Image (cartoon, rainbow, N blue to C red):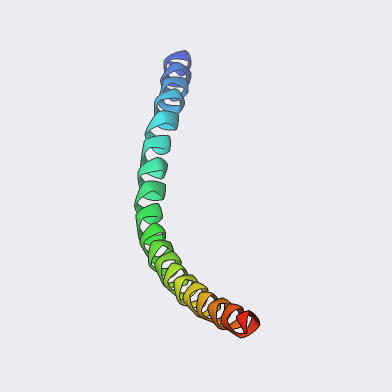
Length: 70
């Protein structure tokens, strides 16, 4: 009887490991979606900021080129 309980406990541990992994991976996947959205929004605002800075620098460069022509 003790050997049966020991064998069943071993099988339970072997089966429990993949089940735990599935639950953990599902939890991590859901968390990544939430963080990914916030990170994406932050990245978009940084891109817009860099585009504005690029446009300002291009205008400044054009102004300098015009001043150096004369």
